[in-house]
Amino acid sequence: MFKKFSFLLIIILCGLVLGGCTLKPLPAALLIKSTPEANIFLDGKLLGKTPYRAEDLKPGEVTLKLIPDSTEQNLVSWEGKIKLSPGVLTSVERVLGPTREESSGQVLTLEKTKAKEPSLSVISDPDGALVKVDSESKGFTPLTLEKVAEKDLEIVISKEGYTQKTFSAKTVSGYRLVANVQLAKIASPSAITPTPVPSTSGQVTKKVVIKETPTGWSRVRETPSTSAKELAKVNPKEEYPLLEEKAGWYKIEYEAGKEGWISATYAEKK
Image (cartoon, rainbow, N blue to C red):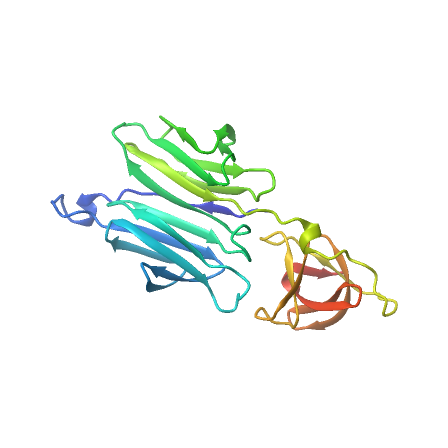
């Protein structure tokens, strides 16, 4: 499963923002979203939490850092340099994972060009990802497409072994839409998930089935709390013996003789 992200990149016209064109540079705009909620630091200054939007920033290169909320101790932070352009909204969206390789996101912005027609550039981590625009394959990253239509585009970035990323953005005449995308690596199930085995503590009549999750797996924790220590990961459609229930949590036997708690949001009793 993958979540579809939608961004509208706009030009802030000087006639609308300043009441007429002047020699004063136009401000830059910035939109930041993250999953889960994160604290935002811009050049070391705390701005607040995601989601966040500002339309009066100084143009130039800045360092953006997203630190996940304290309740998500097992997720890594993200930091990167982005360029804020005058009169342009730059969009940043991140999905914070347990490691950098299992995190994903994209930075979308517009760059002024001399050409009248819009263009599109896609950069990805890792390289060599397939780019589809409006369901049509266009090539592999890094990729630049000149003279694309001025409209809302649906862009899909995919590569074997990585979670597919889908988002939409609007191209603008005289500008190049630049998409810098990171794909999340799909962890090997054998490396992160113990093989389910029947309980040896006696006959078990109740089981739980792991449901689909945004990350492609669900955490097993030491106690029924999101801040508790992570013991293992379990995958969608797998079944485990149900040992105990608490509000919003199921206790399962994820490996012979090993027990832990999973969120009831991503599990179903069978």
